[in-house]
Image 1 (tube, rainbow, N blue to C red):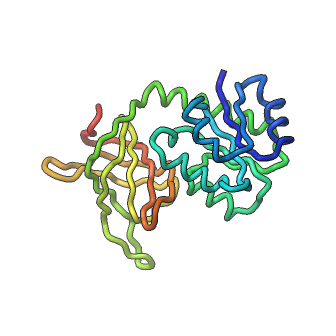
Image 2: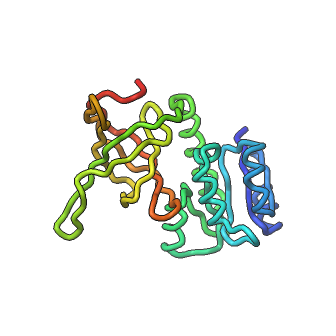
Length: 223
């Protein structure tokens, strides 16, 4: 049974989550956001349901922390909050959240999303073995008369897998954008085209991006 961690300081919300989701999921919950990271490391949940407004340690901060640590960054973080507005949703996306559900919660929608997300994650776990490896890459940028930019940005991977990699740059990429990627150095060549699947804010000016290859025309480090 998939395991969920619910982080919300409202007792009634946590009771509702447990009553609504426990027939399909094992539930671990806490009202204290400071404890959430320790619970994630202890229980290794398949997904995290996170409120935004909590005392001492906000959901924004916790989302950013979970997305930045190698031990937790692959766990889907789903925001469940009473805050509305596109700016809030966009910020959560940039901090690493995979979805945003407003309160009062539509349980059926959440259950459907969890089912699809966790099935996809199980497939990725079977097929993607991640390796901590520094590989120098050049990622091409689109240029325009309105926003001129260098043709390429140089970066180094933090970890990588057969069809994906993680790196940090100061350049902005839109989620869903596809970019050519090549290796740098002796024997460097075009690897293929990769799609931006996640962005996480780090210490200014760096942003961490997760890329997944959509086409490969050359050799990649793992094969």
